[in-house]
Length: 400
Image: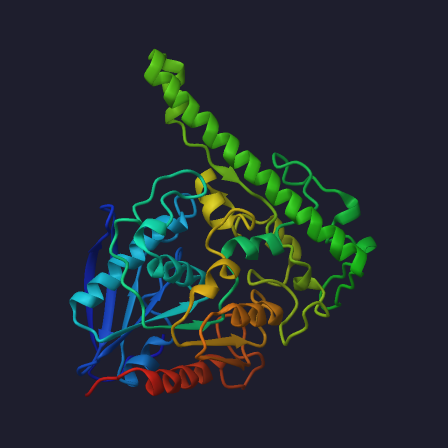
């Protein structure tokens, strides 16, 4: 984050959620702003987000907050995280802001849009359990409705991202090196090429690979459900018979280790969903290091967090499911060189938004708004201009 405008104040708010969890909020403002712009990600700490200075300079307050699961895939269930979002918005309502706009950047987009969907429902119609069966107190929670939604490099949901980038050639979840050679995305026989060359996958391979990806996610869903079922059955048995063995099994919370989740064919074949992006993933250009390394999407998670967050077949936090709920003014800004969100993703998200007042822009830059070539203005600067102009046309700013 570049320097804050002169006179900017920052306040920290300890937040308590409807179900008693703790998270934190950070409010940036100067003067007397009337509209607060919220920035949040379900897993990341965004208190120094790059758009904060531009938004504050334009007369808006900016509220960033953590979730209870920041940096922790082991616990993250999106349905529960909605209560974290609500805690932040209730704090802003208590501070008497006239308008609240949710700014969803990357994974924050699917979180905020899921929140919006549930907030606009009658309380009785809201979800009461996560996909893994955990009860969640959305029906009796106060979920303030946002007045607008803004999106910057939004992706279609963490589950859909993983569905597109999980390595479909894995044949054994217990063996990180297992591979079906007929659908190995890193095999030259299937069209792969090392950088700086561009891979060339034919349509038949793409179809077979995508089918294998869905099959693998379905298998992981089955594993997650089985682990949950085993634990819950043991807890029930222990209550009935008091056996120590059942108590141990019921107390054990297994962790799923999911290898090779950086193998979207679009990482290596730039002719698929063409854009200004460079070869490779958000993790780097080395396909082996990204796909086999210990850092990556969904590497370690609980069965419940897998089903709620990372499963493209089970997660509720998918833009295709939730974007039609957006009836408020909305703006979507995508980056032309994004190697996480592709042009087809941005088009689909924008078309799915239910609002009649929506605009779309495409700006040169990578997923984080950095310049694509040396000496070029970073895309995040243009995004700041577009975003503040849009906000100024629709929402009251403040006075210095």
